[in-house]
Amino acid sequence: MHLPKQYSYLQMDVDCVNKQLYDAISESDHLIKDPSLDLLQSGGKRIRPLLCLIASYFGERKTGETYKLATILELIHMASLVHDDIIDHAAIRRGRPTVHFQYNKLFATYTGDYLFGLALELTADIEVIQIHQLLANTVTQLSTGELNQLHKRYIIDISLKNYLRKIRDKTAKLIATCCQMGAIVAQSSQKINNNLYWFGYFLGMAYQITDDISDFTDPQEQTGKPQGQDLIEGYLTLPTLLAMRDKKVYDHVQYIFEQGPSSSSHISKDTINRIKQTNAVNEAIIFSHWYLDKAIERLKPLPNQPEKQLLMQMVAYLRKKNNSQIV
Image (tube, rainbow, N blue to C red):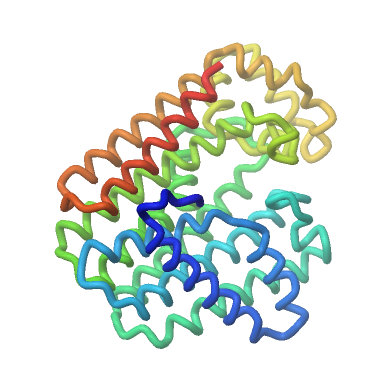
């Protein structure tokens, strides 16, 4: 993520975390090191470690512990990406071949497992028991979210509640934990800790909804994948769920899903246009804005310091992106 000049000190923090990530992975066996370094160097935004770093400024900072936590959180995120790409049959990640596409599924599975294990190894030196409990709970929910998504693949009758639960487990919980852990390690007050956790949760929900909307609005030239990739892979996200209130769209998606994994040949620009014409994308944006409004509410009680303004800018960035997706 590009940081404004006034937050150059945070960029130095991120650079330190990047170095710790590089050092940790570089000590791995070369079979694991090469694909892991490739993923690390592929240009991720580092949103999760950055949120942990920002949160640590709302208390008495302990730089060494904060950097280690931010490193652990990014390793967990990296591991989840490797596993997610296997489940989604994704060939490209950030413009580069995914681990399973470049090697094979079994190799990618072990690579993801190794990154989780590396995160655990680094966690062993942290003395705060609450952090161990939070990490364990977060990884459990992350795995539950992935399994829930896989289990619901090509199933047409998915409720809105199930979708929201899935993105909570897959995305929002980890982002919330990043904010909370930064506050815990800085020994922030319980009130600040709680507000940062819920800020991260609401931001994470809005972030995933925005990403799901982008799947229908961002051009293939920008993303490297066709519009409607989630639908092609058999997953119902918010825009499609809302669009399926139109019986014609429901029947069309049902027909596609009945074809199973071979259904990609039946998903065309016409399918995507049918969904867009229902106003579902604009309704999904309203959902995202609701979560962003809730995130702002959680920021208001925080102390007025530069880091609070940066968190507000993150919300504004997502809101602007949503508005650019209106169809």
